[in-house]
Length: 114
Image 1 (cartoon, rainbow, N blue to C red):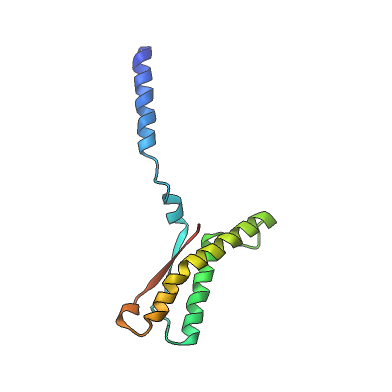
Image 2 (cartoon, rainbow, N blue to C red):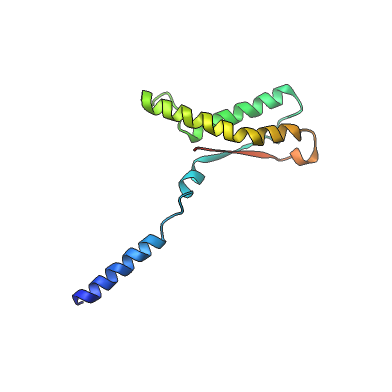
């Protein structure tokens, strides 16, 4: 293989590697969770509280909130969790508003790390 052929092959390999990369949102997609609530009675205060608690637990999970983190990492994870909960709340409020309707059945809320 001469030098020009080698450079062409190298450039082709580099171009192929670039096209095989994952989109920017792929990491965020892996850091999300679905919170299902079909088993809850969202028309009751207990059901609404349970859904909000599930969303908070899911946010803590996707943001990596654990007791084993350093102080800086824990603060970052808690901030991520707070943002994830805040972004999921419109879905929760919509689910609560639709409580008792056919549209509320088999619902889910998506919680994503940001």
